[in-house]
Length: 243
Image (cartoon, rainbow, N blue to C red; front, side, top):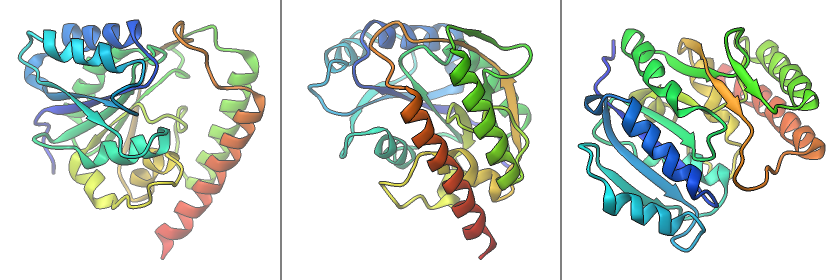
């Protein structure tokens, strides 16, 4: 059985500036420093809009938690998730979070406590639990998300309300066992491949507020494309798991 021995947090940043500052501030202010091994700001390039803010954060860091910057070798969300798993070090657990404040970083301490009690489990913060809060989350988005989530749950035999999310804590050893090698595959495999391999999946409630900095790139066509990709990946992962 694993034990919890610190968490590495990878913060994804591209265009975020004020919300990147706030994300780091909340993480440092709400989490016990002893629980965090490092915060890594993962950016698409050292010239993206988030870059100057990230350097300012690193330079001004006065906490006991190390903060570093890692530049992606290949830009994009899928490569970001792939590369994030390759920089896990000096910790027992691992978390990826965006810097747009849509998923609430204040939930991380509760996720950590759940991980301490269940160190072998995948801990997911879900905006769809009864006690969660959602602000400015459109009806179409809600309906489509719930429909795809239900379909994937049936395909993959996973019970959960937020299977489309990667806002999850993973045991680092479990990530290494997954052997993620395809840079261009959908990031959804990170969400449920561990569960298909037998890892327990535990959800806690979180709050969601639509981003205020930068435009969201989610629209009906993109949701349909993502939904189909998610369902296809669920079939592929289930088939591969049976081999």
